[in-house]
Amino acid sequence: MFALGYILDSAGASSTEVALVFGIYTLAYAMIAPLLGSASDARGRRLSVLLGAGSFALVATGLAAGIALAGPAQALQVALRGPLAGGSVKWFAYAGIALLALSNALFWPAFQARIGDRERDSEALGRAIRSFNIGWTSGKASGFLVAGLLFEAAPWACLPVSAVTGALVFLLVLVEPRGSPPDGDDGGEAKRPPQPSARPREVKLAYLQAGLVANFVLWGTVATLKGQAPKLGTAPAP
Image (cartoon, rainbow, N blue to C red):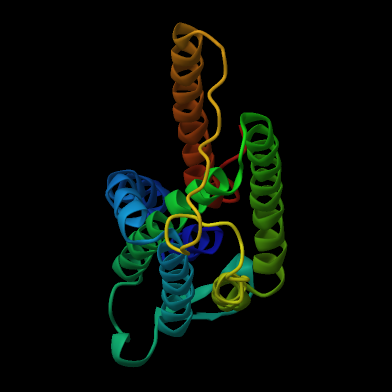
């Protein structure tokens, strides 16, 4: 995600075209995730997580194989290689980011649902959700920082490293012990659903609505910053 915006910027894309990297990803994921989330509930969450991680690794590998990068980050030369030579880097990147959205829609809803499958009461579920969100947020923040440092040092390495990361996640899910608590596809005794809290329904609804608004605002802000970031280095001083 980080590298593709800067790659398009180096290829001469406009601000709107750079912003479409994150825009296409977000819109595609938002449309596909509800469908694939329901499918993972019906057909097995572990399979969905495996497919999502494997697909991510394959898409990142395809992007790394298809996009040739040369020179330092400040004067990056971008082209398509092999049978794609002479084609549009922009549309190749857009196709890749749309496929990454599909991969994430396979992975993310099923992965989150497995947290609920494995917790037996609301207290444990609360702790698991807190730990998950802290880990995810820290990982994403550090990931973008590492991506920025890596892109500055060796732009060509970002896409291969992302492919290796996807493969690592796939392997971690693949070797997961099968004796873990059931999640709708591993068999075993039926899980006990978490007990609902005693808070009034109106309070829960208000909390959900506030969370949705905050999430929308946050994603909009992040999307704007990601779209603008590659252009900031060339912007004239105020």
